[in-house]
Amino acid sequence: MKIYNVKKTNEFAPSQWEGKTKDGQMVYIKYRNGYLSLGVGKDINEAIENLRVIHKTRREGSYMHTLTMLRLIERIY
Image (cartoon, rainbow, N blue to C red):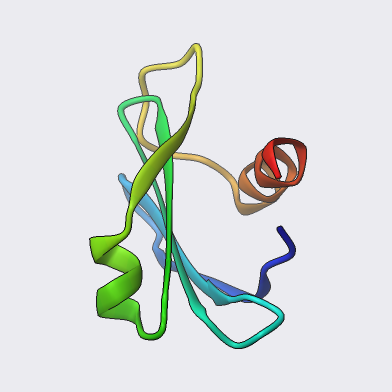
């Protein structure tokens, strides 16, 4: 999945981002307690409602760099 206009919305834990898909849907991503979750919807509220865990890391933290998140999503999708 290619995500466009990715913006980190929280500089502290948990790490959170928003972006858009190629067809304009909203994407919400959160990394908390070692779990990377992603949701997609017509607006940000629907994307948050559709949030699902897509990856469990070996770390237990809640902070992740944006580039690390994008690389993980590229490998998963």
